[in-house]
Image 1 (spheres, rainbow, N blue to C red):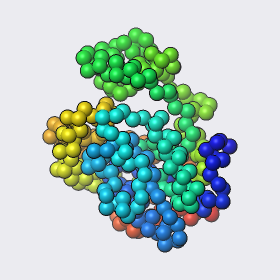
Image 2: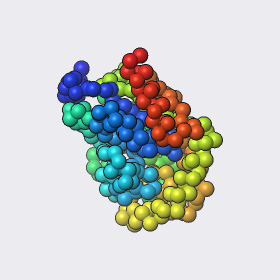
Image 3: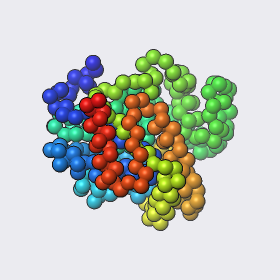
Length: 318
């Protein structure tokens, strides 16, 4: 048992931690709010803990479809809109914050609902992961300066000379992965993914009893919802994206789906990138162990929440 597991009084665990994971556009925030209403009717006090890599950024709420002020009044959402858009942020920084949020909720008798579309962040919120160390402050800045001056292809060639097998798996224009690999090499850390032992992402047990619900939808319905949401974001997010760009948005903030597309005025590109994200998220969903899939096709949020609650009951008592 880990220190974080011991920190939570077992008497406080009225219900396992609930986690909702699903692709962009499936309606996770709306579902979490509807589920919270049902939990309150059962005498519980729910709190949502975001597991989304981009909703952490303050100033990109429209672009990232972060919970609105009205939605946050309906359900307390934590780990949302708290990182300045100029800062880089990583899962290594997120994990201890998420663990503290979950533990604090349980200690105060609340029911934590981890809500996310970033598979790695969901796992980090629920598990103890062995993550690679963060780079020294100046290292990333130096690599990003070289990236800006010379472009990703030159850094990719350097990576290929030092770690050819890894470079072969990273596209020459994948700026983030190239920079991270070179960081690890400079720090003397093996950049190759570790696939065995405690580092295996998909076999790691959760820190606490957890019911993980995968929210799924027929692809045609999902893509239609994604298209409509992309149009809303495109119409409303330009001012905040332009402001973030002018403020010097960090490399990780600029990775938000639609950041570059909104700047370019490329609606179709935004729709295309959103569909790609959904496809990647569904791949993550299929890998998550012990997942209870709930199909919400043609269901409104209230009926979908009832279905999720029924699945929770089956998992808890089955």
